[in-house]
Amino acid sequence: MPFWPCPVCGGKNPIQLDSCATCGTPFAQVMRVPDERARIEPRDAAIRSLIFPGLGHRAVGRGLDGLARGVLFAVTFGLGASLAVAAAGSGALVAAFILFLLAGIGVYAMSAVEAYGLAQGGDLLVETKVLMWALVGVVFVGVGLLVFGAVSAAHR
Image (cartoon, rainbow, N blue to C red; front, side):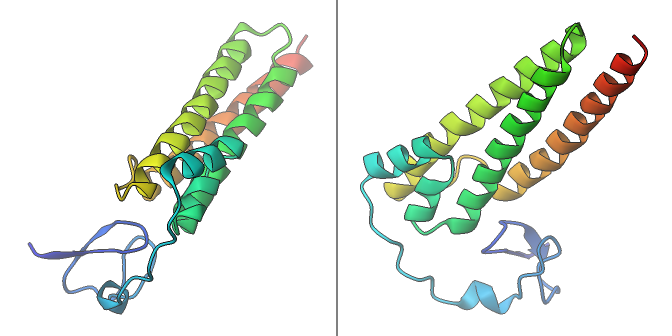
């Protein structure tokens, strides 16, 4: 079945759709000539992403991709910090804190490697829509663990 790729989220859409089923981008966006991407040295793009994930993506003209990585990093570390506070005496919450910490470090490192590759003319390592679904999962798991920690603390 023929499809058209969404230039914003990367979703594959049946040819009969007038807009992306995932993000709503109109089909006409596929035909637009892309703006010339900003030129930046790969090293500088990676350094910007090491300052904060997503800044390197923004520097190479991939602002929405950078925003997704920055938000996922911030939410992962924010929930991890919240779990660290709630983890007092709970082995399960300490394990969850370590998991969130490792996930945040993974997003941080991936963002820098990806920004370096984008500045060299490469492509994303992980599609933005995958990261957005990961963000939804992180929020649900994190909030669930925080509720578990609050209920556990209340029963002590």
